[in-house]
Image 1 (tube, rainbow, N blue to C red):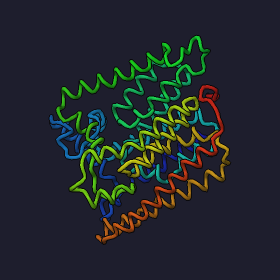
Image 2 (image 1 turned 120 degrees about the horizontal axis):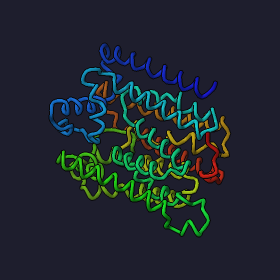
Image 3 (image 1 turned 45 degrees about the horizontal axis):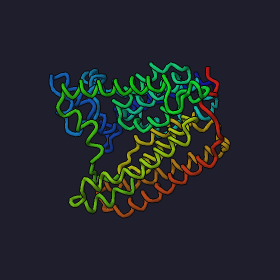
Length: 380
């Protein structure tokens, strides 16, 4: 199957599920649409009414997202359709750099990815921006790549973890006289433009919305969430929610930052691989994990693993095993949320198993890496 046909089929599957979602949401207690989609839509409604998207409780996104989804006020499925098209547009850029049809299809037909985008997650926008940025970097169009990166970090703060490998990757293929160690014209230009755009948007929206800075960025660094999620941290937070300090909540970031820094410095020449390990480590050790977070690192699998020592069968088996473990966690979630049963201990055990599986996956990916440089990868 050619990439073009696969992308078309992938889009049709997504559009079909969006249509089905209308039926499930109307007639079943278990809704198909993600709660975050309602938050986006409500934020857009507040904007239309002349207010702030932050008037909607739990709106913790850039105002730009609310602006984009203003049509949701009149067409409830607009955002889901948009995210699905964006998902497949990301695949268009993906296939320019990913020569393995198998790895490309691993994204297009991944049940988790299909579900996340059709339930209304906006994370496909970040996936598209990542691949556009990588494409521009390969073309050595650093100004445009920097603008994309600055916008990306504005929309979702987590891509800031890519700053280290991005900075050291730029011009790393040049002779030393041009490379100039840790400095070069292109490095500095990329840093100033991306950082400038991020700071400019931050100042602009802070002046417009006084809640913007805390709700969009600062909240995540001191977040205390006692709701069940994929992270093994959740049970400890649940049991000591009233006594846990903001300092304790902030300290949980330390393992993540260690992985992010070390992976960025060690693998920056193989940029997609560095980004994959950074993101996987960041998500695995995060104190809150939801299904949308998995999109962040799964999106990098096709490009990062095309030079892996693992063959397609091994990658497929790892993917299926991971998906089964992800699904088994949802059984506990179902009994807790829908049946109202006290299954917190069971969910905690499932979280620990899932954490160990993700850690093993990260080690397996690193062990099977073939040294390569992103600059040398051929591209259409």
